[in-house]
Image 1 (tube, rainbow, N blue to C red):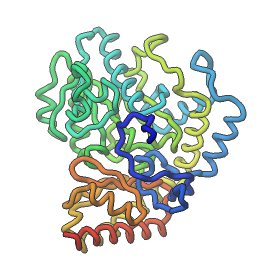
Image 2: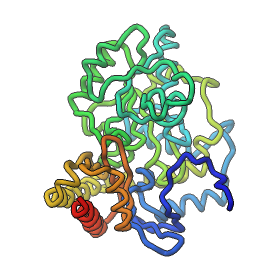
Image 3: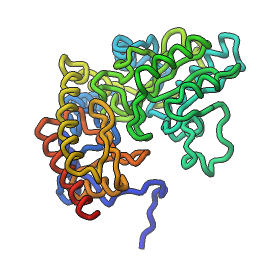
Image 4: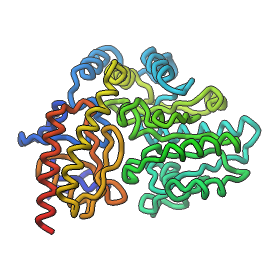
Length: 393
């Protein structure tokens, strides 16, 4: 008997996929699964998208890596496009969301330091948040299950209940540097901060000289029907972390900031070996080619409405299984009355893939390129899964 050579940190499903086509994944045995998980909101343009494949293979034949000791034209181009499409003036490229958050945290602390407030380093966060798996980001997320056994919690993070802005305001003190939140919590159960709350957070930051950091690792890059989820509110942050969808499956992350917020990020204070490499930049630019096309984001919202209408009918039929639909765009959550693990498994039995989340929610994060017919197919599978659980109960 051979032992597993991998760290046993994942409770993996007994499925292995050989290839993907659009919204479909095909196992090594040839079974086809409808991918409503999207690699946890990563495969924004589905599997084997021809434009992404062409961009990656063309770049692979030229240059893979040179390091940030030299100029990388694709990095400058992607940076310019992100700046043009957002609140930001500056971009730092990383390989992952956690690294983008680390950069955001360091940017905020450094801002306070260079502005004469080295004592300001604490960041207020919200329960249910998920900001990554590094020592700093698990401290920012504050979830005990991720903190346990890793020694003292990294100092500098103060947490309040989800959307409790009165508590957040009371926590603001002489050491507070920033407030950090996900406009739509993913791991926390597809919970959306109300527009009024985001406006109040912005006001609190402005009043107290704090920086506002948005984590759009999961909800960004068209997922909610706008390029960034915070655009629905009209509220802009000072710093923002993105990843997942910007690479369409290739590891890409980025920290975006205003000139003012990034003032302390000067030569030598932060770095990365792989971040912003030519392969990643070729893919990131290819993703933006598609997502920024006229009508693409509007079509995400249209498809989301079709999906929500179908899901509402399923809830009407099986209220003992699903009680609520959450989210916007193609970042949807099903709040369950049965254990969410049961619905994930039942969907897998119907050859549809989904993702569990906190608050007993099942996430639906399909490629933004999912077709109307595939949405109807998905609704049929979700209905069958709900029916099997309803009958079982």
